[in-house]
Image (cartoon, rainbow, N blue to C red; front, top):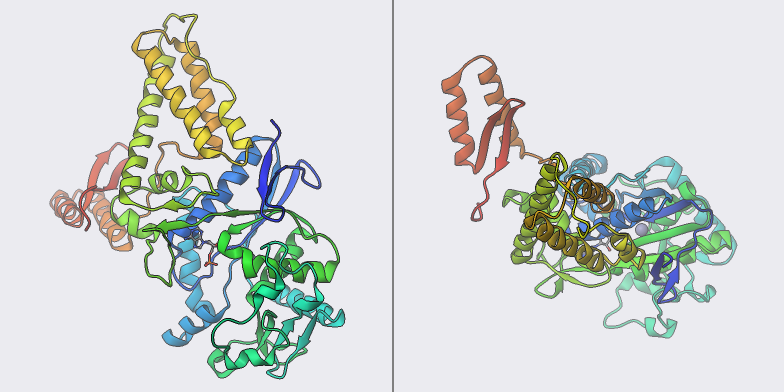
Length: 470
Ligand code: AMP
Ligand code: ZN
């Protein structure tokens, strides 16, 4: 079966035909760096990672861009409240984000443009000027510049919304009266006192860009006027991606994106996991409870991206068990692969079912079904001494292929919290200086904080002790 994906734009499964195979341009909306990302955000990034990895398994060359939103209401508010510059405020969250990506084994994008970089600001200003020239945007009395949605007939196509439905509901904020139409969105926000020293000069006065134009500017600068794939969570569809289409196509006159792909939300008690509801876990919350990045990755990966996924600790335990099954299976295969054992003619052999399932709109449940069915069958064959070294090697090779998409092998990188890192480093130095008593004291200190230390020939290994909540 050919590769096919569900396109939000057409609401249909479509055969995948990129513009310039094997090259693929892919844009993924990234984090707003005003706090640490939660695992709901990471569900979206892991879905995008699976997509990229599967495309690469199928021979495509993916050029992926993920933006970093480092200026918006929330980042400005955070900087103001902590009385530091916008850049100093966002920097630690950016750093944490990249660490988390690593813990979750998410492949790095080719580029991570930041909205406040001069070349993108210049592009935003250029695009806004062009939209005004084409009568698609206007400066209102409040000095902000808005997109005129009435002049863009396709507005609402992606979200399948009727413009008439965009009537104001409830009380209209006083600043909304400045606009010609309640649905018009800001391209450039005029400076106000709340913005403090954050602002850039533009032909429309001092101000800052709207969030939507940031993505249009960064994506078209780095990937050209037309992209193959654009992803995000379903909450991005409207207004964010709808606005991106209006702005980009309004400027270039060309179809902006071929395939729009959106993942369903990660839920907690059937509500979206979000900062505003306060029902969220960060990756660090989970690693502090003893879960590894690999376990969290599995938990977020195992359900089809278009199906809402309810986060539970039972689900975390199931993920741990699933990974243990894989690890034990691989261990057995590795053992057999080095022996001289006879091959039984009926031993199960790998097939292409795993990749074929992913070809079908990233059907991960189907793909994992193939994996666990294979594990069951080969375990049975190994129990019966029917699987020899040749078959074991073939299965190990199969796993390597499968794991290109999954990235779930057992090598674990754990990020230690800074205070544990400091204790571990002190213990390493104590041992170098043969300070055994000091080293033992530090071990006890680490134990007391819930960490285990093992001394191996490669040095000390630190793992989180799994147990009740700290
Ligand atoms: P934000 O920082 O809110 O712009 O979100 C970054 C990305 O995470 C976007 O692609 C969102 O659609 C996505 N996202 C936010 N919350 C969730 C959630 N609970 N489940 C899945 N994706 C989410
Ligand atoms: Zn975006």
